[in-house]
Amino acid sequence: MNEFFLVILGALLALLGSLVQVFVSRWQTKSDKKQELLISAYREYLTGLAERASLLHAHSERTEAATAKMVAGKQMISAYAPVEVVSALAILERSPMRLTSEETQKAMVGLLLAMRKSTDSIGSNLDEDIHAILFSVDVREQ
Image (cartoon, rainbow, N blue to C red; front, side, top):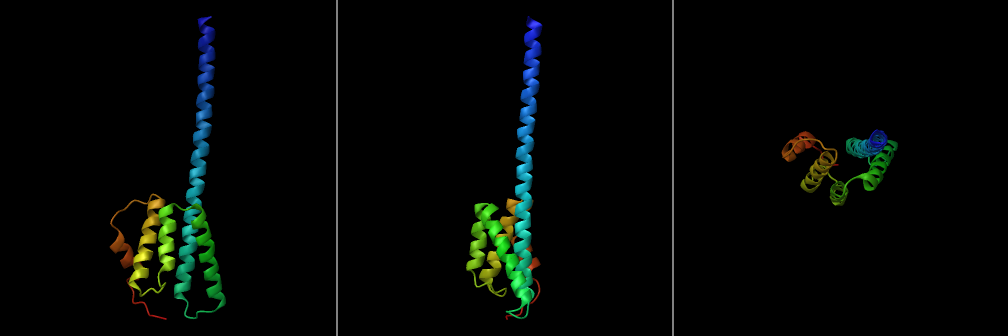
């Protein structure tokens, strides 16, 4: 009789272990998918922003394509990103959106730092480094 209970207990523990593994695996897959969506949203927004900034003519097909990328990225960021990233994006969008503006530069650095934090990118006190990377060339006012 004792052996019967041990067999049943072993089977129940094996079943419980399998169920725990399934739930952990599903959670990890969901977490990985969310991370991929975030990175994709960030990439799309930042690519559109860079394309818009590099255009010399304010109204063209390329401007419309870049704007479409930015809008798609903003929608995904609004839907999936943590509060800090959404708030940082809103601060950037409220800025003058001129690369020569100190307010815009500070907001862009803040957005990138929030994005890095949300994707678990390691690094701290990168404000000055990110600023140097983004704004190290002379930017002409358009």
